[in-house]
Image (cartoon, rainbow, N blue to C red; front, side):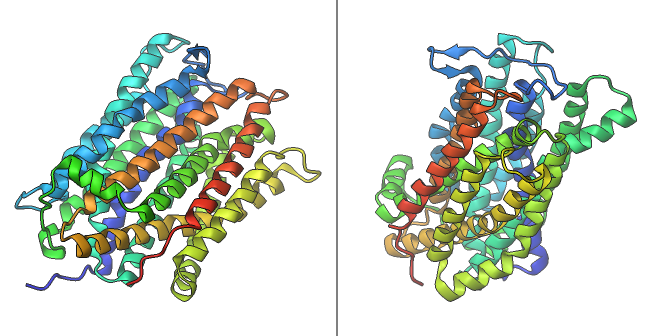
Length: 446
């Protein structure tokens, strides 16, 4: 029986799942350091002490890294279960359905500290909630992304569906970046004196909305109708070892890890760059993210055209190079002889094209790698490829948050901002690193 083609409506429904996942993930990335270790001019209570663990890393770094260590085991485990699933409703959708409520719950609980004051108990609490949040998010996103090569049969369809998926991701970034703006409205309408309480109510509302978005593919996409579900017969460890054997895939992973680590640094630091380096209000952070994402959406047709005309690899290499220059500029924010608004908006506009291309093309490339491997080996291990890829993405995000938090020890307040500027230098090095490794990647020909 021929596989049914996804209509545009169904493609948009598929992309809505990424909107929801992006909202909750980016809330954690953007708000966790700002909520628990805010700068002195944020109007928030500091909730965890700036202690050094083992005399080397601060406690926020330790928390974020500890939470992700569980993913090193759980990501491939859930991928193997999904790849081998013989559920009559499909290999992917049933897992996604189970994950939605835990994602909402543990994302919200992460921002509900035990003590509304500086306390080590808060550090223990968020370590536990982050571990459970990451596990729930993995249970959704690994099967969700593994659906892409199954729902899109041709290279063109993969790029198009990946473009819509990335549009969902950046919409989620916009929404998560508006937390402070929405909290302003909540605080004004409710009369809350506590800024922390206004942020908590805002996060609850956004998480509920994210849950609705993640539910749409589960409810409206019939996996059996739109994809061929052939369970893999390889057990977990042989499947994982076989996936890592591809040197081409390794170059892809290393460059992807470096990029997402640098992106996490800029996401975690945006509110600090705005308020500390440029002395602007925190609420402008949401506007900046919205401008960057909306401009990046305008580049989507150009990215698709350039990828078709010249190939995906040259476009990605150019994007890494441009992104490295953006990070160099972060190091000098507030020191240029022009207004603070011009400085930050120029930076945001320059980051828009890399955000578009590095969001769309890697997913399409990975879909081709997984499909090529299935043809070559006869084993459908799409879930394992996406598990490994998203393990590296999440490790990159985590080490990005950890690096940002670690460097804030060297200054995160007005007049004492060396740690923030060092993050710009770190992002530059990571983007150069990504460029070097991806230059060795050999694009899959189809």
